[in-house]
Length: 307
Image 1 (cartoon, helix red, strand yellow):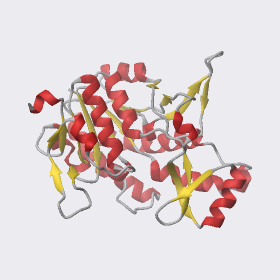
Image 2 (spheres, rainbow, N blue to C red):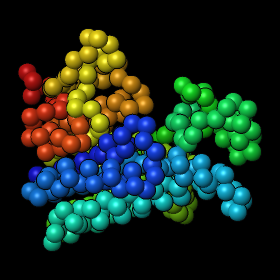
Image 3 (cartoon, helix red, strand yellow):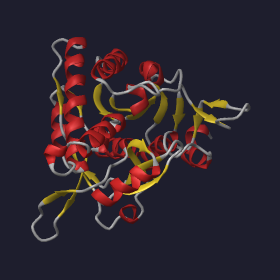
Image 4 (cartoon, rainbow, N blue to C red):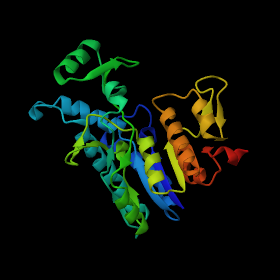
């Protein structure tokens, strides 16, 4: 079976943990302990979030006078892809002796006309008091918005249109390799209409939506979206909360899920199921093997599977 497993940022780091080196390495070890079991009998592609790492790098870059100007988000995204990918490869090689494992810095094509560029709404970096946030916005040309605890930078999150290294990933899978790719949704790029040149853009791409697109392009049998909770829940955040064990894309989309966490996972699962007819599942990282075998998590299938 060919599986694309997407590790959410909260799967690699526990909530409220800072992405310092020891904590990141510990999160990687936890992830690989769960994923290595899947890799032994399946083709496996691993994508991962990079939100905490990207946010830290963005803050450090903005505060670094020797640079003259902050590094653009496409460069920071490539940097965090390389770091997390390297740590995953090291751990996977130890867990899967003799199995080829590689990490790719991948690029995700986006449309420069995507409406997201007119409405930057994804938070990046730390929380600031309002006056400091406004000063940084004037200095660097940032968009800012109020978050729960203060003010933060906001950036566009355009739709992924293609993962440019899909053919390379396909070839690596056919050679028996475990492939780590699509970190942070991939480096967002546009194509110059006249020259074909790739240009990085000041944006981020949703990791889960990229994973769904990649799973579709690779003709994967299963999309596994891993986070820090065991299920999608109905009536989330209320005393009536109940785990959702099986559902369809339409029902999943109708639930009032949190926009910044579970909503993109639900949309990614729904898209993969609708476009391929194959199953997707959402659940806890530590239960990856059990989720793939249908004994836990929230399974998303076409309507007929529940009919």
